[in-house]
Image (tube, rainbow, N blue to C red; front, side):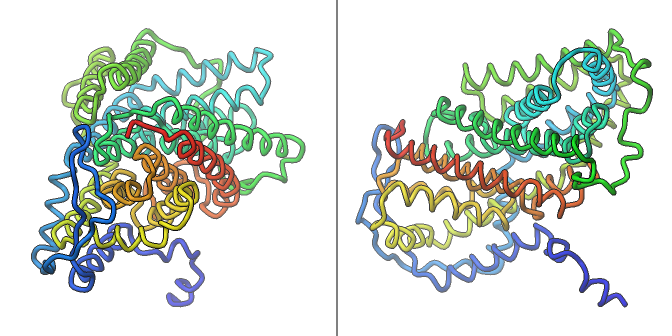
Length: 471
């Protein structure tokens, strides 16, 4: 009976845990240090950055990684990625504190009541809500926003739509905002650091791509919403129970107290400070983490929260993203093993040979697709950046592709597929919160991902065409 039950499981439920997949990669990479010949390129400093010299590859003495060193690479990766691990913890704790005050639900209740009494069209509302959640994804992150997914669900159901509209506006908005964010510290920031580029440089073209992607998503949601308005049987989640996801009381009973307004103000100020700091002072992970911590304390103060209760909520918020945070360090172990085994440059050399005869524009698009495939087994954006960018950046150098364009190719390939892969814990958690089955979600979001990826290919080609710099 159990075997028959397992046999009937959906394919994505048969997948091993993300940690198992990563450890398998770590083991394979360790074995490869015995198989792949060690080698290196000659590098030279140009304008303060180390650059690979073309046609300088040479083989070196083999340096395979042993069993003990393989396991030691994991805690070593945790240490190396500690700044990223902690920003995930503190950001989640911050939003958990905000959610505990009730300010968000009351704000939504009042907002929906006012919207229903206005003449604003449903299409405009969908676009506005989608872009708002996209902004949160772009500024705050992906897993950090799990706690606010119910907000979009509440809004959608209160406006007469279904769970899919709510999930698309929230999960889709957050996911695409995170994937295409010009100031994403987890992907762009990490990749820029590895590429030795000014953090968050190339802001203009990335912003255009982000806005274009959000427009594609909002258009797709509004088309779906119109279909279910015409006939509710067109809903992909018609049979899913929504009990407990609606607003907990009548719209007339919601009100924004002085405390609620103060909490929302702290949230908006915190987001504003992060945006200003990253753009004006080039803040990085440590500074952003500090702002989240200060924001959480400010919320606790304005809401007159008991100190002991405040700490408990912070810990609870951090604990909810433990898996997503620690996986970054595990993924970093891959890069450490490649470096210890001295095979990174050999892999670069092997990848560059077939691509050298292709136009740079084609190579850039193919590089993006490669990252999309890798993202299935390394679902952490920062983890994948640490594992692959030390290879892809020098490869781009050899192909006369600017590092800015190579970073965009990574950002597209890694980020957009986050909305498709069940190996991404944050996505599955958000779908669980919204009660949208993965197979229904996949049916809705797959065409959107294809369209946004095609738009990304256009921007990548533009990057190559204009020799997008710096460097």
